[in-house]
Length: 112
Length: 115
Image (cartoon, rainbow over all chains, first blue to last red; front, side, top):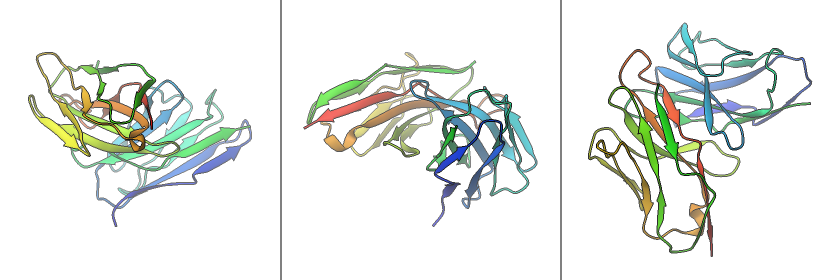
């Protein structure tokens, strides 16, 4: 079955450590996205990629980095420069602009 | 830039009540419009969509009509159930410009349905 997966579901890290969140899709979608969700703030776009080897900053890219070496994969690294990294992170993919996005189950990152 | 404004919650209803969650948008081009639903601890699921003016999206008893004249996409359901309790997000995808895949979300509306 086609879908989008994120791992792990829960992640704990110490302050000052970089951490990489995984996102994989087998839907043959061109576009992939990373969103951050905080209580009461909805979803905010971190990075997005429309094609392999290309990506653009979203609204809150500072302290994050991404890569898109394969169509199926779009990992997000939360660096130590991110001031408040504890949040719920959602990955999504889409095929065309009119189809909306298919979301993964999310990763809840807690920085201790 | 693009933006989505939806009614703030929380919204609390009794089972079988009528639901309306208002959503208005601002976009530079001709956006597609979406409603997503999020159950506790999960990702977002696409509930319904509309891609052009006067289109009506519908799914699981929920409906929303793309109103270009009022730039609105209000979500409605005639009779809610306890299982509809979730957070609902209105979103748009603007097809103009170079970032035509990007989704812009409202802040979400928490719906609680009591038996």
